[in-house]
Image 1 (cartoon, helix red, strand yellow):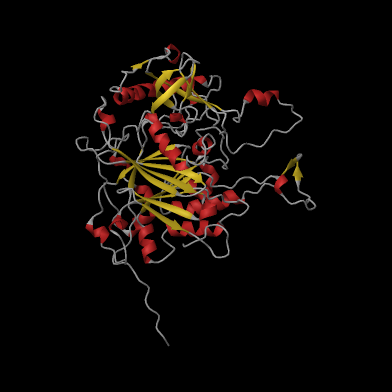
Image 2 (cartoon, one colour; image 1 turned 30 degrees about the vertical axis):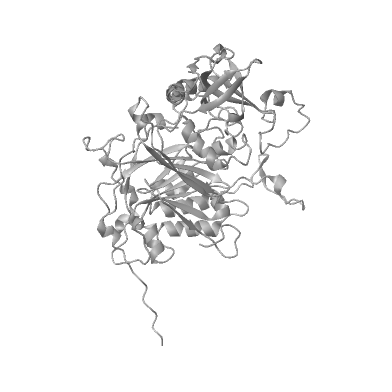
Length: 533
């Protein structure tokens, strides 16, 4: 009788790294306070606040960029004060005049007996006009420089040019606020200790022992073609119960999971059912009682399994039971059954900032891997170091479920503009959702615009995109700027997450090097996922 080979075991118990979760800065919070829950304000206040917050940064960079241009251009503070034939530059908010864009006045005037047309996939057309406006008024921008600029409504921009005889402003060059300061610039994430690197695993790279963050979006539990098998494999992988020794060693280095929206599938309406004879459904008090809680219960079961092993951050998305307007507020924890009992399970807003720092005391036993909620949160108070004389590295992760990029994509021609280019542009525009509130619904903020980027994140995650894409954006800084924080170099890893139901893809980001790894889950005979697992 043949003797089976013994199962391979690691030379040391696998332990999961613990990271400290920091509270985001006050100006980086997307939670709507009770004092701001009012709908009596006009949306124009958001544009005024946005222009006031970003004008100085555009002006500083514009003077630095165009200060030595031939013709000595002058800065005109008000767009309506531009003089014909004089080279100058102006600063204002971009407004795209697009005939195909939804118009609320047309909706009101439409005959209610005629159904509304379906939403357009693109607002872009050859008849679009670019405007620049401020508190004084609006001026039309023309010129070849604008053809492939990829502009959308709501961007704060500086324009260099001359007013023509017909009153248009012919643009020669444009300028944006640029990347915001990055608090973590120059602070290196600590490298793993040698004891952590000595794992008996073949083919493990030097970065394998680093701490990683797992990113996923679009689980869509309960959808028509749900990837139940892949979601189960995902939960087992994150818990260290799936794959071989190398897979378990990799999953043991994952410090937390971020789910970027669309965890539940969209509700299937009765119109999408077959044309066969409808079944008789139970009715109570005149209402249809065919609702089933199974998708929520299934999602709660998977989140409970994962929360036992690692911290989980859950964002709402377009198909989740949350408000449509941005920023979407956190989903109620009570929806998720046993997962709500774990301190490692957190419901976040959409968008949200997640700030982490290395733990002071690493895990010392394998049982620690099942208690990730014991992160050393006491090491820092209100985001400041316990040792003020020695600044400690942090990683800031900006995540949203994809609505801003999806809406901006309707404004531009494709090609040449891509979703990755738009995501990168939002960093240089210093704004997460510039098209809000024009075509992207948002809360009518009065005193602030929370979508303005006060700082450049280290990792920028966009969920629920058609495909995976990533790019490392680097900026060496400009030594000629007056603000010292503006002169420092910046680095940001952009990650576009595909829908897990369609791709079966889990993305891992190295917190030290910002390296990317992909883990794909596929089940034979199921349409979701596919490819090599």
